[in-house]
Amino acid sequence: MSGKRSFWQRAAAAPHMVWSVLFIIAPLIFVLYYSFTDSQGNFTLDNIKSIFNQKYVVIFVNSVTLAVIATLICLVIAYPLAYIFSRMRERWQKVAILLTILPLWMNFLITTYSWMTLLEDTGVINTILKKIGLNPIHMINTPGAVVVGMVFCFLPYMILPIYSVMAGLDVQLIEAAADLGCNSFKILTKVIMPMSVSGVVSGITMVFVPSISTFFISQKLGGGTFQLIGDTIEGYFTGTAINYNVGASLSLILMILILISMAIMNRYTDTEDTKGRPML
Image (cartoon, rainbow, N blue to C red):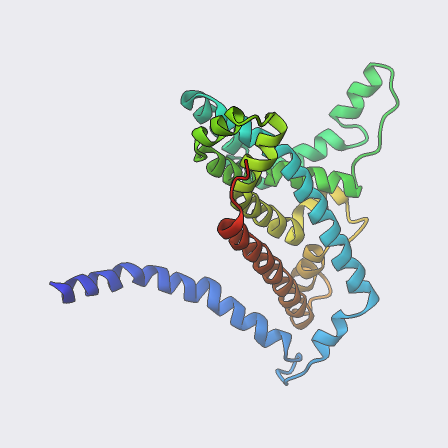
């Protein structure tokens, strides 16, 4: 029986292994191959060296800056919302979560084009401003518009992991803190925040990674007035100046930066999980 069970376990895992090989391992092998070869297939480090010039450094800095800003805004908005959702009655929690994930059911292209309609110089927002006698504001084709698009598209990915952690918090700990004389601020900082760090770190990871690598949002809401790393990589693979080798090198550097960020945040989470206890 144990042999049959082992066989069926391997059979059940086979589709996952095939998927991983085809769509995870194989693309990574191609990225590594093109990163360290030239157009003739010869080994070279010139692709990696070419990235470390001022042009690409500025692009990386801009990408990281906008991604960090969007992530922080998502955190500031998501944390109180997640707490409010977790304190609702169960029926209303389901409604709140449904409304949170509802934008994820919409097509990503439709969402971005909708924000273009809102933010354009002749768009909905500026039309309303003119109607009430205010001067229109130039919002489209700016870094601010790109950040707005990132926040709207990725905010649910910040709310959901924080909510899942907060919904599992022991209410008795909060009540005990109040009985011991903690006010609302101390309950938040001494009990709720330390116990919700894992959800915060998960949310930061889920927002920061797509924000730093996005290209469609920056193209449409940024209008090509500035480049982010996602735009640059996409241009080397589909643009007029196709260069798989440099594009793969940029992808490799971006992947390393993301892995380093995730490792740091996961280490911080492990530390908080082992040492971070409610301090009443």
